[in-house]
Image: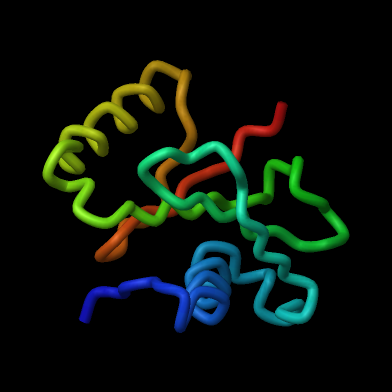
Length: 110
């Protein structure tokens, strides 16, 4: 079953995915911070990080939750292809995983 993240399971799902990407966080669950990041027009963006590292850290993970019905005007497959090309060119964030209504990728500090 593919993961779907909404307000009812937001923190638990983000923490579970974060730990699968960053296994060294598993013994520091109480230190994981989830923060809504401003700026998205069609999506919601959340950051997951260890509180001692702070948000502006290379260890931070970004979670993009797709907005309702955005698949009608944003080609999510093409979006993934563009992300992969950007990474290959050294211009983009590393992609970690996709879930039913979003994706997780690397935060680039700066």
